[in-house]
Length: 360
Image (cartoon, rainbow, N blue to C red; front, side, top):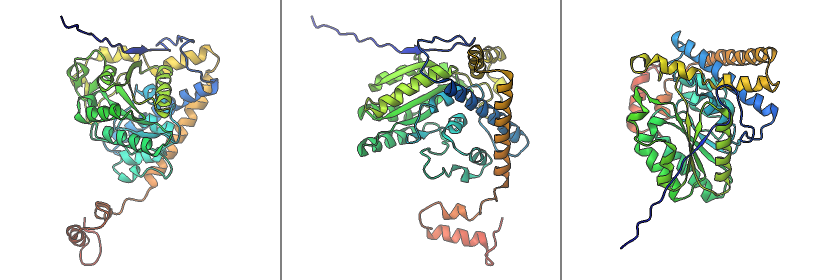
C-alpha cells in the first residue's frame, strides 16, 4: 500500500499590546522610551494630517481622498522598521508610512489635490509614488528586490497592499516570483476588512490572508494591526530576514477602515454602524497612550505639545502646497514619452495655437 504523507502548516498570530493598554513585556520589542514616544508622535501626526486632508476635500481644496483613520499603527509600526536605504512601495492608503519615511507633507497634499508633481519623490528618498491601480506595484516591488539581490545591495523592499489586492493576479505573480527567487521583500497587507464595499468573506475562503504565503514557499504571519508593537516586531524581524538573505515575508495586519473607502464612498450603505463602534474600542493611538501613561511616558502636557506641534506642521504643509504655482499644461505632452512623437507635437501645437498661448 502506498503511504500518504500529510503536511500541516500553522500561521502565527502576534499581539503584544491589547486595546486596554496591557502589554506582554516578554514579547515587546526592545524599543527605548524615546522610540516609543516617537511611534506615538508619528501616529498623532498621521491622524492630524488625515483629519485635515478630509476637511480640505470637503472644502473643495483637495480631490478624492483615501482616509487612513484607524490604520495608523499598521503603517507607522511597519515603516519604523525600515532603514533609509530600504525601498518602500505604497499603494494609495499609506500616508502614515510616508510620514515616517520623511516624505514632505506638502507632497502628500499636492498629490491628492490632483497635481502629479506630488509624485516626484525627492532625490535620495527610496520611495515609489502612490499607486492607485490595485496591486500593480506588487510585481514591481518584487522586481526591485530581485535587482537588489543581483547587485548585492544589503537592503529590504516593503510593499504595502490591502486585502482586496490579494484577489488580483498581480499579488499572486509577485509573491510567486519572490518565493522562487528568495527575494528580500516584505509584503505588508493591511487587512481592513473591506475592499470598497466587498467584505473580506467575498475575497477569500482562507482563515487568514497570511497563510497565502505558504503556497509560495515563505513565511506568513498575522498580527494585530492596531497594536503598533506587534506590527513593528513582525516588520523588524521580516526586514532583517530579507537583508540577511532569508527571503520574503507576508505580514497580515488585521485592522479596520474606520472611514469610507474614499471621500467618494458612503460606507453606511453596506456595513453596520455597530461594527464600526466595536472597532473604535481598539483604536491604535488610544491603546498606546494608555500604555505610555502607565509608564510615565505620557501626560496632558506632553499630549498638548505633541498635538500642537503636529497641527502646526500640517498647517505649514497646507500653506506650502497651496502656494505652489500651477503646473504648466504643456507638461502633459512633454512627459508622456522620452521624446515627443509627431502626433504629440501636432497636438501640442494645436493646443498652444499659432501665437504660442495655451488654449484651455
